[in-house]
Image (cartoon, rainbow, N blue to C red; front, top):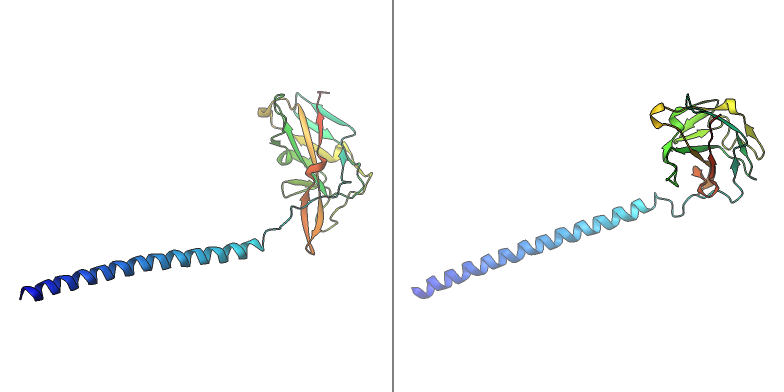
Length: 191
């Protein structure tokens, strides 16, 4: 009889060990399935992200021929000229009120009052429907077309940075590109 009891105990132990092994195999299969799904999702999402960064041609350039800045009212009027060899669609404008900063961090786009339109946090010279890269080389936007009413809590603006932008064709699609290699900076003085 003791032989049968020992055999039953041994059989129970083996079934417990088998159950433990099947749980481990289940976890291993679960992890393998999650890894396989992750690889599939990564491969699928990779096709949606452009491989290369959108670049503007090397001949894109803008300049600020003249401006007026009233420090008392924080009103900025500036004219922008396309001084490059390619047409541009618009620009980004940032400012700094700290002489120690080398990078302008205050986005002036929300304070724009002018003849252009706003899109993608940029100021466009015309609407999307009327033309993509609407400012040809040499074209100038006068001061009346670029007015900024900057809130007084920023204090005196010391410098502005203008980054041109244009529409480029990438994989047979029209995309909006920032021309980071053509940033122009201008120190401001009160008029």
